[in-house]
Image (cartoon, rainbow, N blue to C red):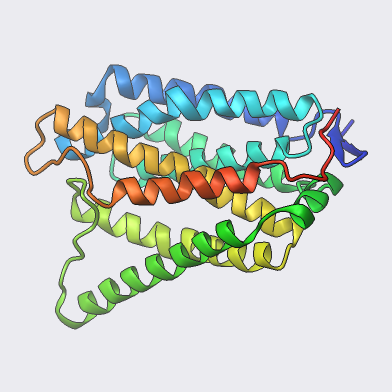
Length: 280
């Protein structure tokens, strides 16, 4: 039987649980293969090390966190399913890079994994706005995470809009990030930011500010997945530098501030407010 809501919590397994476990296994397998043999990612050292950096975070942080979140949901944690959905969002976004960066030996695995993740995310999001979430968002200090999300939406949107206009005028290629990136990767990052992150961050900021339950869910998706993505970015920088990729740097000077914003906003969002009873 499907999961039911009781006393503000989710009880019983939802239809996303088994697919989410399969996604966790698939993500771990794909990341482990990438770590063991970067050659599966082709001949471009910059892209190879970038994807291996992403794999390290998936293997060490994202997959264990996904399994723990599934366990928390099973035990009745009111925000367990929200965390599951947030981690699925990270997996899907990350493996989109693996899939669309170019042909690799793992194309079929990555394509299957991305499809399974998107479907499972849809199943996990159904029923995320429980009474526990609604109660939490009423007592939550929403201003800081909402402002952070709003600033990120405006900054990302404006930066890539300007870059797109510059390209339309004189075909000036955007600089991208501090990573050594091919034109394909730069283009992919801009497209994913403009079509996924900017709308997600903006919607989450507005709805969270208005204390809507869905605002909490979207903010968790944005901030939890975003924090892990920032960790992946740092790991990719380190992997490129360790492999002596020409032009690589050990750290983006802006990254500590950006990562701190994500971490603090995530902590504020997920902290249980006073007046909200712990799930039993």
